[in-house]
Image (tube, rainbow, N blue to C red; front, side, top):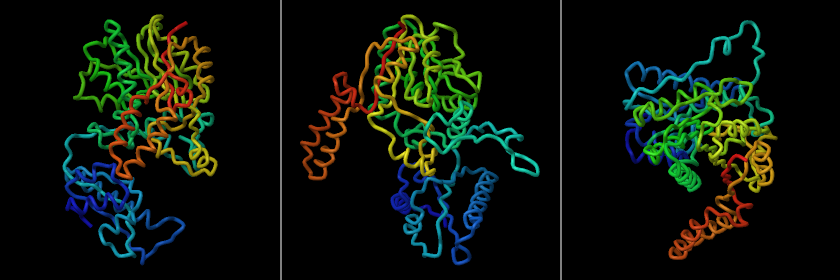
Length: 413
């Protein structure tokens, strides 16, 4: 079934519980793929799923052959809602949507796996798992983390327009991300043409915002990550947006150990946005940050507070049904107690200049009260609560220890 009516697209998005993906609204035509379950609905080899997948693959290849752009929307949370929006009979099962139209640009091609990695003869190869359905970092090797981050990034991509927030819906417009950009901008402005380094940039969001805010002040900007594939994604994304010489992309040279390929004492400002949590033992990364930081430099490190545990993720991990694909930008992650983080930085050779808490428990409680006021139509009180909340989103009082996020500004001892 082909859909071109904007009203029908909006109804599909609402009933399909998929309002975050802008492709559905922007594409001139949407192809809804259905399978007739009166022919077959249950099969150990998932025949209906495979059959629909083969049909969708054929659609994508045909679109490419005709010079069109096409993308399969696999994020539909409620296929039954899509079927209801299109008034499909009960025996037709929806298997997703294909967006069709003319491309604005030519997308980059990600790096392919080597043939030896994907082919074996006469027996299944005995290679290690590429990733784990597990949030706990201790079960991950560095090579597995690097591979996961690279492949999930290229798999989903990210929209420059701010509408397709697949990789990570938290940065760019969140108060937490804005606080970090503002603070980093102040640290950069205090120095004359400083060198700045972002740790595990991934999709280059933070680096891009720093370039937009601080280009006249920055002497050099480095976006460091684990693989050349991630670096190439960042180059492709920023191509045409920033000058090619405005940013460099150093890559970890070894898949068995962390090593930032920059000289000792060469960086003035370091940013690390919730990346220490990738590792059960983040000390090697912290020591590398210490090594490249200048004696008078500053490192701004953001970590998640263990006061807010990943209870639902741990439960799903233990049931072996946790999907890392729903947590695009992170993969494995852990949280830190304030004392634990302070000990880590001390062992790495840092001194804590300041500790700020973002979104303390009091602010989260008040946010609940604000939503209640909206429901009761007490909008004046709701506006006052929002103003109060925003003024206290960042705190250095006692409530920083019960904040969702901890921001450390570090210097060398």
